[in-house]
Length: 370
Ligand code: IPM
Ligand code: MN
Image (cartoon, rainbow, N blue to C red):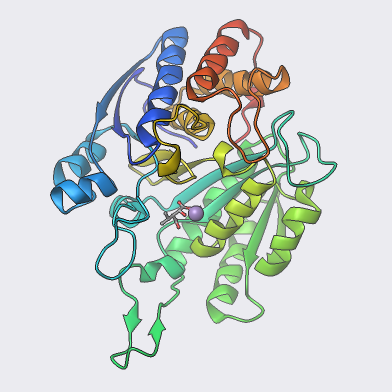
């Protein structure tokens, strides 16, 4: 992620969110503040209400003031939003902000690193760290989600449709981003196009554009899989993957599948990036039953903080965070249970990452994985 503003003082709009959101965001903020101190830059956080609780209070999950704060900030740090029982009249969840933030701010990239850390219980037998290390580059503003809010229920009440849309502009920019990501990573220099072009015209169109762009990147190997085969390959040969580029809904599904291979989505972070704005979030939900137990795992939020630092151009701080997490796992200062929860609780995980980021003076920016 190349961005811009090496200004060493940044305004960060924070959406603490619902359920466990406020706790894990607070834990991640401690880590971010700590790294800012170590690396000598400033983060000014301003919190904004948004999500299911804002919907209950104001009738709007993203009040105008919150949206304005997000637009004005250098970056947005977002906790999980939405509560299962808080619904719109059409039955969809009221607190989900994806449509508003992703489409509203034209955040066309959803970047999700999938990486197996040491000692993390993976659902895949016999897989070592290093063998699962790839990033999902999910198209974030169109595909089947272009139909968000626009689906049609027949007036007979007996049928409903949503329409999948793939545009040339939307495809070119996400595919180009995927190739740039492969170039930047220390990986296999491979981009896998995941589609269903054997059946659907829209995906044949997408694959055609992929081939055009691939020709601009002779140093990166183009690779192709239909989405069903990709689901199988992510389990049977995860070491095939470096960067995946795909449509919105396929990316949604496969990133959770990827999460399952690295200890669950409790350790997976995502960046939503456009040309002018970006937000960073754990990819899991608000887990309301865990709220205020002190047991919520803040790692995905902390790793989202790493993606934010990288976006701001603070690559040293991002690398320091990445290596602190790596080392905390290696030395079992962070232990994950098979269900993805952290054995030691929210605060202890944040403190472990902070400790290892202090003591780890030997780090290299090259190890940055996304
Ligand atoms: C995600 C989530 C969202 C999505 C939901 C909450 C709308 O699952 O960020 O992956 O489907 O995009
Ligand atoms: Mn999802």
